[in-house]
Length: 452
Image (cartoon, rainbow, N blue to C red):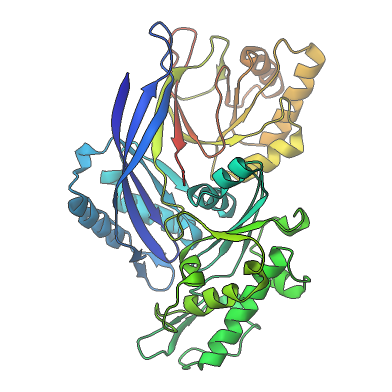
């Protein structure tokens, strides 16, 4: 039996804001006598909004009311009402993902958000979302090729290394088309602080075309260094964002280069210099002439819309009967998932995965069936160390939640502990957990659907 859902995806980025409306065909793949297992059978894009410059108060703070007006206008243009929408996702990316900006957006959209997934995407998540939305992950999976996807926006460039259809590393540079903004007369009205020491251009100055191109070429060189196509210099360290990993140390031999983001539209398309009131056209042209485009490369199936091609799809089921909870206040809503592949990950791996989450989340890994006491004890100690002072929330596929939870309770008697099993969660998904239903817990898995 199939069910049709109307889904909305909203991307509020550093430079642009856009909305997309999709129809999801959701199918129950379980038998008539089993707990429902809902999967997406088909997704059809019904409406794509215009692309707006993200409204700002000053140079940095997002205008929440301006975002709300955009949503109202686009709902009307799409012919939908708030009550028609079944599910969706609000993705807050780039500089707009800072806490005060995200709060302003969510407050303004509280009447619309409802049961939406809300992802404030840091560089790691944004890299993954863009690589999936642009089709780079699907391309790697289909061809077996290693792909280095680069999403070049207004303020940053997000990198994702994709191997055999899996994102294996991410990174972020302060390289984007709107590091310099100009007015209608071509006069500079904004220069990003990240360019300090890299350019002599100043506020109020009208730069020559050669000056614009020289800066764009410098930024393109940093992208080449990150892609392993130019010898690395201090420029790369200068433009690397704080906390970003050094993906370039893990690159295989020349991967396929894939592009998305607003600047990607300027790589093959020719625009007038300064057409968008920034240096995006010059940066796109510099990339076109760089080593990035001399080997095998591709533009994403989506460029500027790569991140917004997503919506939250909900699938409800029950966790296994051997769950454990202590000091938990139900329900838990929209827990971000950090998913690991190792059956029994170590403390460092778990800690790194948790550090990438926005706020408290849940750690998912396969686990093992019928674990020996020694292994169970070691795993509990590793989990306790990885979560530090955070609420301990674990989801596993193997039937071992009760045993692990009881062992954790001995180590952390006053801590909030939740262990559930017989649930498979994917990276980038979100989880709701309801109050106990008999010996089990009802859970709702919300997955960001990102396709080419």
